[in-house]
Length: 98
Image (tube, one colour):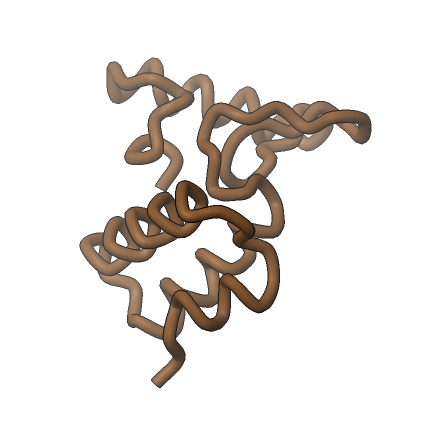
């Protein structure tokens, strides 16, 4: 079985705070029906994209935002904003982005 801590520490998670967020992300994905392997794989990508920080804005590039660097050039950021509005949640919320 893939151990989340080993996988993420080897690649992109550099602090205990990031590891704590990564664990929350994996739990959130498991609660949404992902397999453990799928949740860990996606958490690894999220760690690479955003350091697991849901309200981070990309420095440089195209202005991506959040866990998966929702890109405004492809209307993904706008879709996240619309989804948050529809669900009456914050677009910067970890739960909303999951």
